[in-house]
Amino acid sequence: MEKTVKNGARNKSAVGKNVRLYYGILLSIMTAVCGAFFIAAVWNVYLSGDGFTRERLVDSINAFALVPFILWVVMCFTGWVLWEVFPPESKRYKNDVRYNLYRQKKRMPETVSEELKASFEAVKREEKTVKILWLVAGIICLAAAVYTVTYLCLPSSFPSVENKSIPVFTMVKRVLPVVLAAFAVCCGVAVYEGKSAKKQLKEVQKLTAGEKVKVKPVLWQKWRDKAAEKADKKFYSSLVKFMDFTGNHYLAIIRTAVACVCVSFVIAGIFNGGMNQMLQKAIIICTECIGLG
Image 1 (spheres, rainbow, N blue to C red):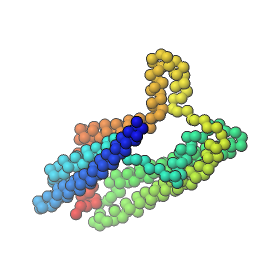
Image 2 (tube, rainbow, N blue to C red):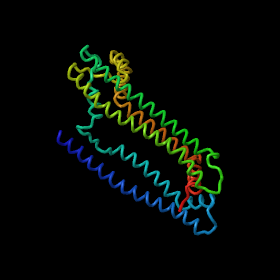
Image 3 (cartoon, rainbow, N blue to C red):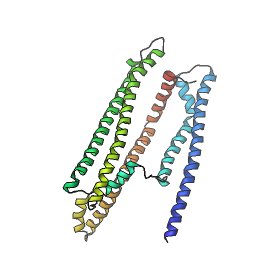
Image 4 (tube, helix red, strand yellow):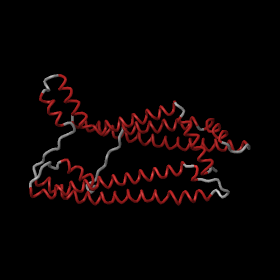
């Protein structure tokens, strides 16, 4: 029986690997085709000899590239579904400090003796420091994003001058340092988190070796225990099952909920004309600001 289960899992893994491979090839081909249709749309306006205008370019893209682009978006969403149905194998290595720390922390006791109290406090202190640093990095990145988007959206940032390169150089000087600073902060926090993980791992190993392991309670544990006392009744029995499921799979539930909200907004944007407006704005930016060809 066990051998059959292993063979089934191995076959499913092989099928998933082939599905991801062939889908990746198909998506790459579709991306190239979609790009070719966009180039054909621009080339069509160029050959008409009437010059580039927003209206002509929008009409040409709607005629040539709109359907391939929608198919490409559908394929991208299909790929996300396939990756959920056939997830790639998660490979973890013995020298992966963060993964080892994650596994060891599951066995870390909640209460320790006086001899190991210093190690316990050191771990909690490092955890708090890392969370604060990532919070600060997130705030800095958010501030940088708000500043960059605000600057790029203000018409006054791009005055009408004869030398078109002057506003572009001004944009680079004002935006690039902010983006690089936010990137440097994130890199610094990531490096510190790696060093902190090594420190924590040593202390956690002391705690798990010197104390009897007490498993941390799952989500809803207190309410679950109270409901379990009355589990003979059908309502409380169902409540216990619900708490067990949500407590063990709450991350998957949150991700699924967020994905559903995102897909709902995308669908709403398609039906209320928002996708068309964003496509036209993207075309205008490419043709008037960056330039094509």
